[in-house]
Image 1 (cartoon, rainbow, N blue to C red):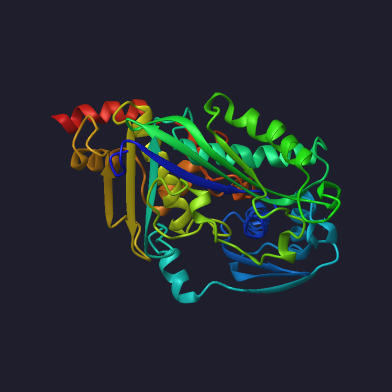
Image 2 (cartoon, rainbow, N blue to C red):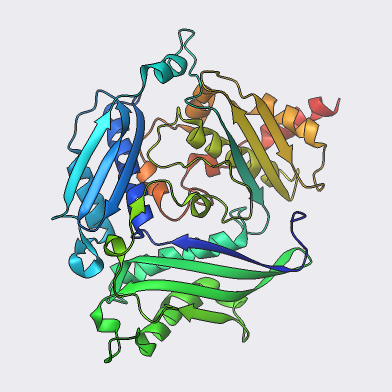
Length: 395
């Protein structure tokens, strides 16, 4: 990537689904899903806060949907595994406070316009990125970090490593030579666990448990990118017995770099979870990734950064920028013009094209919003349209 030296180490992190911030993201998106199931036009901005023994769910929600918010939150917690104080939280006995009110009428005026269009629910700038480092067209460090986090959950839930708890973090450092990833230099795993994995003196995670985590999580995921110089650190403080909301307060929207490109690409600052798609932080963030991925998949660039800018109440973006870091087939200005011709960029256009009124956002709230083929914005179905319109741009 031209923004970085050709020879370098680059690190990205991910977090487990039981990380307190991710716990909150999932509750926020579960509430959004329940609203959309009953009212596809619902406008939702749902936030969550969790600490020892307490969940607070609040925000601005305008909807005809009626359901038990606490029940939704408890289901999320049970699915993750927060069912006992042993793991730092029992969602079935925790106090759940609900503080929800309607969207501001001043904002609503700009969103629900008289011309039938949908105005952007806020001002802001959103970025999307794609590159050829992986088959998912994602940067390798964040993709590996997500896969490690998913593997931690898999071996916990299928009881291969029954002493693991829901909380955890992963981190991967990749070495680049000549701008290409060649090996993994360091893997960091923070895996919460029960007393069963603690040494007799109570100070450390047992060495055999660490080696099991390496064998069942790290080796299967990193594979051939591991070598004799690769360093692997499991629970670097010694142990991870006190975990979850018992030791770490969680908030919705605090893992925006984990959710996107792991720091490899720039970020506009807006979080995703708990927001309905009239909020362009979410819909335009997804559309920008969709655009960048289709540009790369079409062979127009090896990497691509897209920025979309919006003004609250306006339907069309105030700006469209495309950057291929000097390695694109056509100029940045021509690509930006091509993007405007090919992709629907109004909130309504993005919502309709990517089918964003459908529930299913809970699936996005852990392990990253990008690089996962089950999502509509990850499809590469605009290649023919891009290449067809490209002929007109060149004329």
